[in-house]
Length: 274
Image 1 (cartoon, rainbow, N blue to C red):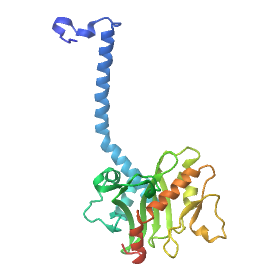
Image 2 (cartoon, helix red, strand yellow):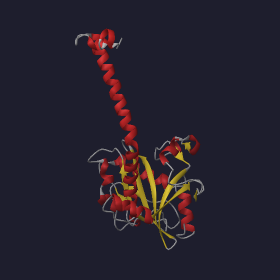
Image 3 (tube, one colour):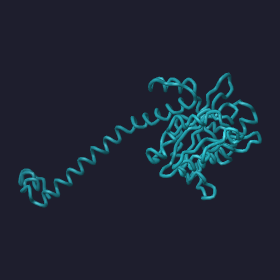
Image 4 (cartoon, one colour):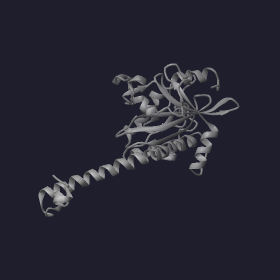
């Protein structure tokens, strides 16, 4: 296949349009050009995509922490002014002071065998497959005390991994908010987890009872107002049993001893001091 224009013009491209060799050459050339353009666009747009993804998550953190933002600029202002990001060593429940929150990538760290552990099925109710050694936590401070704790939580639902944020008061027991910002559940059914009215049911519920036992859950069939269990339970949604179960499982995992449990117990034992 030659492109010597001095002897053969455009080589194969000077052949008849219905020539199979020319058709193949045009197709290959078009694929190469498109591949280069797509790859270049992906490289050039990645920083912007990363910024947009960070902004979207920060918007949810700010909202579930109890602040209202009108636009992207205010989201950044509120996040910088009121949200303190710390990296937590899940095993000890202490802060990992040698890890920079600004550069920490939680999903990358979870994929890395050096900073995560494979989970056996009986250790993995949330079906996350790998347990990270470190996770970020987001704190709202007031007079050097923790006012609000925002915990990133995730686990498998019916069709997808549910990524959310659970907010607790400074007592590390009382729920002040819950949101899910990424999932692929069934539209019109499993996506009830996005419904503000359903999320609002979590506000004021207790994650732990007086003895420290984890009690927060989504209850199938609703709750009875006169029952003491109402303090710990949120109404499920009929027809979305597996998504509801996924929410229960991820709450059980991340509020338990494998997740943020040691950190929360430390806060409960020392009041609301970070």
